[in-house]
Image (cartoon, rainbow, N blue to C red; front, side, top):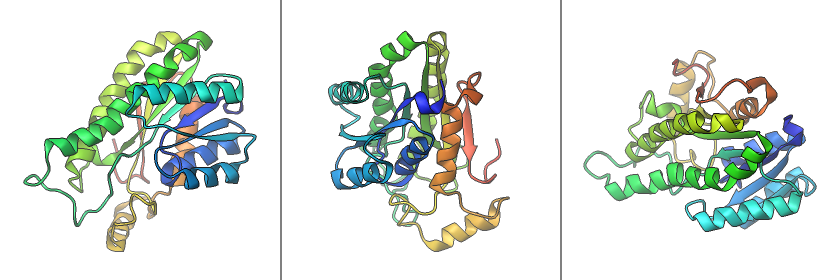
Length: 254
């Protein structure tokens, strides 16, 4: 299925990387669901920038299965066809602040659980809500947003890095099960992105260090990561599943 024929849900897409992803899909002609949890104004701004003929903003807490299922039904009713493509991008209560981050003495299990609920529980809910329609079509694309930090934890964001490592296990296990239904499940892992709301607390010195140590001599942008997400949704990736693509200018080579 070409991208222009797809209905794409991007969780947490009212800002930052999520907004860049929905705009990239819309640029290619896809219908997009701009999911948000709190900031309706920003979500509507994204819809306005895309055009209401291609986009709809829907509020849903991805940690609540019932809300996710309602969102899928709303999208299906609005576009007249089901969601075919899911991008699990939402970031729950986390800021990339290397100075004020929690360390091994201060991090708690509750901190871990918050990130696990965003990364794993939220992704599980979207997969459950979308699987039947995808199986009926014998087509589905699930793309999970990871991070290069669990492969090279240059900053010890304990709870965040660990949840994204778990998300890779989730990705590969789902890929193994859902492949028979024509559904691929992959991960795209960016590095620190310049510059989003989530990375706004990061000192400029950190970005300079990344530039100096990255083969491409630049910090990756949200738009560059978004283009890699498009690849996993496109026909060009039809034989790829269970993979993790690191998009960080070569900083981490796996």
